[in-house]
Length: 144
Image (cartoon, rainbow, N blue to C red; front, side, top):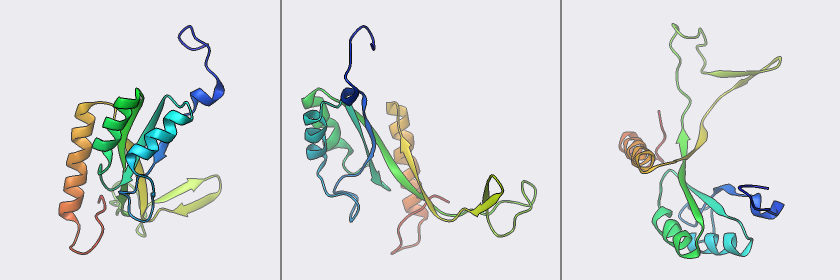
């Protein structure tokens, strides 16, 4: 029981990491099609995280609003390996992640970011804009 009503297990699933066709070569569906699939699957909500931008967010939000579903907006932001100063950690070759007895070198990675408010959306847009302005020409932007 959730809030006094019984939910089926299928209704409790929410996809939090989908990409639209605006994520070139990584997503194939238009934002409206993602929402239609969400509605047909009786999902209460879905999140759209396009790569390095919020390209499909307006269309995704409007389609979800028409369908009576909750649209979670975000982006999957590309991040580069960053140097850590000797003051923090004495690792010269880059950051490492220790899992058990193994050390894994952290290289470039993608960070999924979901916003929870209008202010969060504005901050995400500012972050993406700064990332794109700092990237060298003819290269994909990355947070540094």
